[in-house]
Image 1 (cartoon, helix red, strand yellow):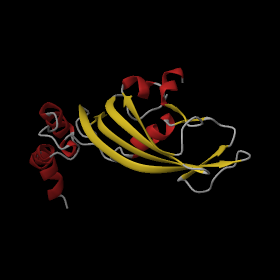
Image 2 (cartoon, helix red, strand yellow):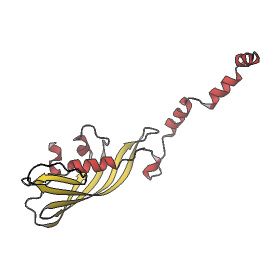
Image 3 (tube, one colour):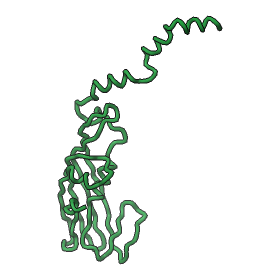
Image 4 (cartoon, helix red, strand yellow):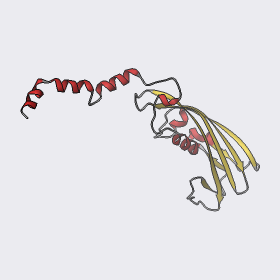
Length: 177
């Protein structure tokens, strides 16, 4: 996780109020996560940190494109994404787990917060459930060669059904009824 060291925000020396941090996300970011759904992308993450006495408010704005594979034709395409989310970080004397997914609890002795996993999770949640070339908002459509091959190999093809009904052996068996 040394590649993600740059995503650590040291908040202990910051004054109370708003602070802004910008991060560039590329292939090396996704390579740091072993089983990432996204393998490649070019994104810019802006994290606005609002430091208060008892908590930190993190506002994430992530924009850019990620490379996905089409579920229909398997070709790679660029999917634009834009994410705006908020995360609350509270301080406690001991490490407690929070039931609320929007609240992270940090020990008061901590002096920095690593936002790499938060950014990674936000990007993965933003991935569409079904990936198609057409939904990317571009003029790109599915690979015509692959679509033709899929139609040819599809079971229950109309040409196969016509061949089955034209077979004279079936006609002879039907007469026996």
